[in-house]
Image (cartoon, rainbow, N blue to C red; front, side):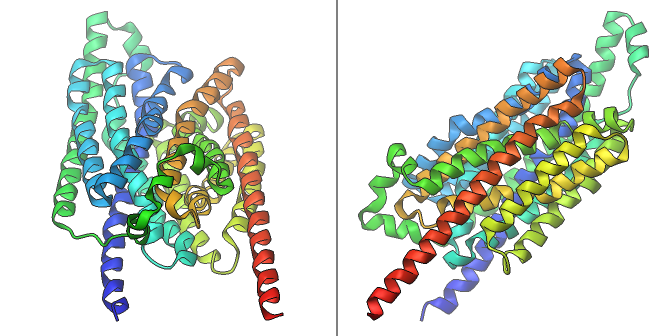
Length: 436
C-alpha cells in the first residue's frame, strides 16, 4: 500500500540529486579552462600544470573514507549539506587566490572544492542506485550522470569566454618591464573572480534548498539498522568482495584517463590541429562535452538491450583504438578521435560504480567510499601524461597513458561479464535442483 506514495518522493529526490551531478560536472569541466589560464599566468610546464588535477583528485583519496563515515553516522542528507558547504567555500576562495597571485592558493581553493565534491559523490552515487529497483540501478545512475555530461558541454564554452580573456601576447609580455608584466598577468588572473563567486553563491542557494528538503531513506540504510552495519566499516572485508576490488582498480584508471583527455584537450588541440585556445575550448564543449552527454543518454538506452558489462567492454575497446588514432594523426582527424573517445568513455564511471556495488549489501557505503577513493587516479595519471609529453616534446604521445587505462577497463568489463554469467548459471542450476 505504501508503494504508490513512495514513488513520487523517489522521483522528486532523484530530480534534486541530479542537480548535484550537474553542478559538480560543471566545476570539474572548468579545470581544462583553468589549466591554460594558470600555465600562462605562472609560466608552467605541462607537468607543473597537471598539479591542478592533482590538487583536485588527491582530495578524493583523502576525503572518501571520512565521507563514508559521515554518511553512516549522519545520513545522506547531512553528508550532502556538508559537501555543498565545502564546495561553496572553495569557490569563494578563488577571490583571495586571484588577489594574492599565488599558484599555491589556487591549488588550495581547488582542493577545498574537491573535498566537498568527494562527499557529494560518495553520497549521491550510491543514493541514486538505491532509490528504486536494483536491476535498474545502472540505468538510473547513467541517467543522472547524463546531466554531468550536459555540464561538460556548457562549462568549457562558458568558462572560456569568462576566464580565457584576451590579454597581451607572449611577445608583448616578454618585452614589458617586470612590474608591468606582473600587473598584466594579475589583471588576467582576476577574470576568475566573477565566475567562481557566482558559482559559490549558487551552491549556497542549493544547500539552503536541501536543508529544508525531506529526502527518503535508502533501503540499505534501513537494513543496516538491523545489524549488518559493522561489516561495512571494515576496509579489508569490503575489499574481499571481488566486484568491489575490481571496480576500485578500474575506477582508478578510468578517472585518470578522463582527466587526461579533458584537462589537456586545449593544449592537445592547439598543438595537434593548430587552433586557438578559444576555438579549442569550443571543440571541447560542443565536441567532447556534447559527445560525452549524448553518449550517456545513448548508453542508458542501449542498456535496455545490452548488458552493462558487455556494453562497457565494447566501449573500452573503441576508446583504446581511438587513443591510437589520436597519437598518430594530425589536424581535425586527431580532434575527431578525441571527441570519439569522449562519446565512448561517457558510460564508464557510472557503469563501473554500479557494477562494483551491485549486490554489495552491508558493504555498499564502504564500497562506495573505496571506489570514490580510486578517483585519486585523476591526481596521479595526468602527471604521467605530462611527464611523457614533456620528455617526448609531443603532447600527442601522452595518449599512451589513456590507452593503457582503457585496456584495464576492458579487463574489468570482461571480468564482470564472466562473473554475471557464472551467477546466472548458478541460479539456473539451483532452480533445476529445486524442481528435482
